[in-house]
Image 1 (cartoon, rainbow, N blue to C red):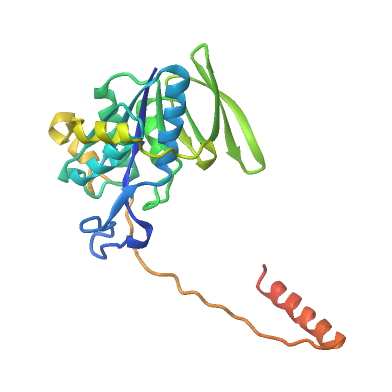
Image 2 (cartoon, one colour):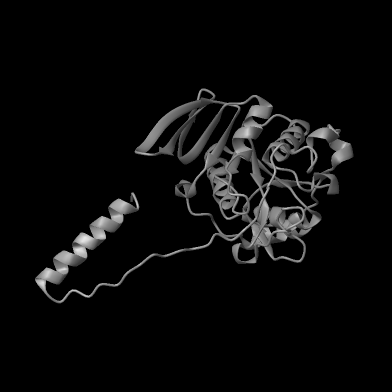
Length: 264
């Protein structure tokens, strides 16, 4: 069984800054980590590795420094890792990113399963997993909270929905996006850290992937961030002190009137 885990290196939440000109996240000079939700995808892959003797490849698209995220994945137990990096990829939205990742996965060979985190903390869209599945013409199940078993080429899973969980069976190959309930991510091991230190990471760039330049980067991204701003928080509050029964009734009536007025 071959598994690909797509991970992303993101700025630490407290370090996120936006470029007002390009309207993209500033990544240079900012401390970066593996997208926290991608750690759960790595954990899901490792669970499958233990159960079905799977081979895991971590794949990441990003600047050269994203190699540190891939090496951390190797230290956790991933078998190999690949970096997709080129300045031409800068500014790619989720659609362009999905196209680049899909083309890289095609060149890496056939995978039985592709795992992604629910979403990335810097973009918060949750679109790359499903869009990549569409580009590869594969079935996809999102918000997976438990992988039950693999039987006759079908993976039985459960996923979170609004009012509970839904059980599904997906024919492999396919794509899953997982949530935190999949399992607590394990820590890197000493042996894993030694392997990560020595491992050579192959890479892809624009030339090796032979991509359509009109479909990548800012020019190839059909979505645009048109405005960046901090939302203004307005609190319309009134403090009422109620010491008697009559004052309590008055305060409750005032609160109900406010709720009705604001259509809460």
